[in-house]
Amino acid sequence: MPARGNANPTGLRRRYEHHNKGSLLSIQNILFVALVVLGLIYYRVSVYLLQGGSTAAKGTVHNHRPLDTQYIHELQEQGLLLPSKTLNTYQEWRDYATQLASLTPEKIVKTLKLLDPFGVRTFEAKLLEAESEKKAFLTQEELRSIFPCPTSSTTQQQEQQQQQRITLPDQRNSDKGRAFRNGTEPNFLFFQHLRKAGGTNFCSLAQHNLPKKQVPKYYCMPDYYWEAPGRPCAGCFSRFDTKTITKHMKEDGHKILGNEWDAFDPDHYFDLPATFATSFRRPLDRALSQFRFECIEDRGCKIKNVTKWWDKRSKDLTNVYVWTFSNEGVRKLSIGTTKADSERRQKVLGRALDVVARFNLVMAMEWLAYAPNHVQRVLGFRDTKTLTERVRPHIAQHKRDDGQERNVMGAAGIAKASWTPENYLPPETYTRMSHDLALDEILTDAARRMFLERLVCDDVSMFD
Ligand SMILES: *[C@@H]1O[C@H](CO)[C@@H](O)[C@H](O)[C@H]1NC(C)=O
Ligand SMILES: *[C@@H]1O[C@H](CO)[C@@H](O)[C@H](O)[C@H]1NC(C)=O
Image 1 (cartoon, rainbow, N blue to C red):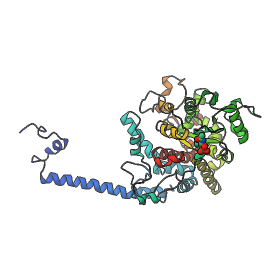
Image 2 (tube, rainbow, N blue to C red):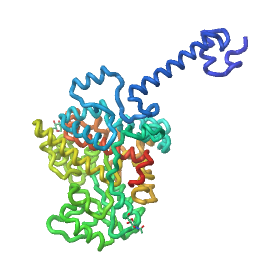
Image 3 (cartoon, rainbow, N blue to C red):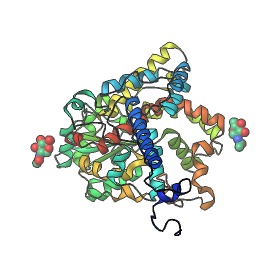
Image 4 (spheres, helix red, strand yellow):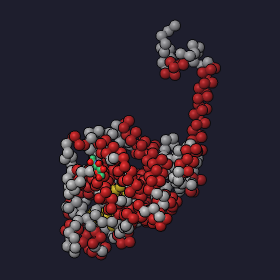
C-alpha cells in the first residue's frame, strides 16, 4: 500500500480514507457529499427567508435579528421593542427610534444591546474580528462585504421600496455643501464638537486642507478673537446671532467654526451660510474619556473617584448628545418615570435625530479610518491622512486610541483594557451611567448607521 495521501493529497481524501478504505468515488462518498451540499443550501435558504428575503449576502448585518422566535418572544415579554416591520425610510426609522425612546432607560439599553435594531453593533463586532484577523484596516470592498449598501438596485422590484435606509430621503442641504467646496463667500464649515469624540483630530484635518489664515489658531474656535459681551469663552456660539457670526467669519476670513461648549441651535444655525459636520463616539467611552482627561490627567478637575464624578456631572452630562442637537433641557425627562416624561423623551429624541439627519457630514470616531473618500466628497478635503493616522488598538496594541493628544501618565496607566467602561467602572456606576445615557445610545446608533450607509452607498453622493 502506498503511503497515505501520496496518491491524492487533498484534505478531503485524507479525512475520509480513515473510514472508507475503498475508492474516493464510492457511492457512499458521493451520497455523503451530496447530503452536505443540500444541507448547506437548505440552511442558506432558511436564513435568507428568515431575514425577510432580503438580498443581503452572508454575514451582513442590516437588520440584525436573532433567528430564534422563542428568544424574540421572551424579549418582547420583557417589554423590549423590536421593529414590527422592515424600516425603509427615514420616517420609519424615526418612528421606531422615538417609540424606543418612550421606554424606560433600562429597556432602551437592553433593546439596543440584545436586538441591535440599527445593525451597527453587529457590524462593529464583525469589523473588530476582521481587522484583528487581518491586522490591518479593511479595504472598501471588504467593508462592503460586512455591510453592503442596503439598496438593491439590481432589479426593478427592489428599487421600489425595499431600501432599509435611514439616510433616504436625503435631508442635507447639498447647495451649501457645494458652496463651501467651491469657495463661495462667505460659506464656511460649522463643526459641532462633542467633547472627547474626535474634535481635535477634525481641527487638524482642517489645518491640513485649508490655507493657514482661514483656520482660527485657537482650536478652530474663531470667537476667541471676537469681542463679546458676558463670559469670556471660546467655542461658545449661543452668545451670537447668526448675522454676527456670519459677519465675523467673513471679516476675519475664517472658514471653520468649532462650537464645543454650547448646544446646536437648530432654529437659527441652519440659516448660516455653512456646511455642517460632527463626530460621534460611543457615549460611555466618551464620558469615561472626559473623566480621564479632566480629572485623572488633572485638567481642572480634582475628583479621582468616577462614581463621585458622575454624581456631580450627571446634571449636565446626562444625554449630552441629545441636549446638544435638540437644544432642550433633558435631565428631568431622562430620569423621570411618568407618562409625560416618556412622551417628552420621544419628542426630544425625534428633534435631535431630525437635526443630525440634516448635517452634511456625520462621522463615527471609531470608524474614521474608513471616512477618507466620504470626507473628500463632502468637504473637498484632499489630505485625509489625519483620519487614518490613529491605529486601532486591536491592530496595534501599544498605541493609544482615544484621540487624546498626549500620554502624560506613562505606560502603567495606559493599558487600554482597563479604560473600557465595562472594566473600569464599578458595576452600579456602569448601570447608572448607561441609563443616564440611554437616549444618547439611540442617537449614536442612528448616527453610526447614517455614517455607514453613506460610506458604502454610491447613490447618495449626489446629495453630498
Ligand atoms: C458654487 O456652488 C454654488 C452652490 O451650488 C453655485 O451656486 C455656484 O454657482 C458655484 N460656483 C462656482 C464658481 O462653481
Ligand atoms: C467612590 O465613591 C463611592 C460613592 O461615594 C464610594 O461608594 C466608593 O467606595 C468610592 N470608591 C473608591 C475606590 O474609593
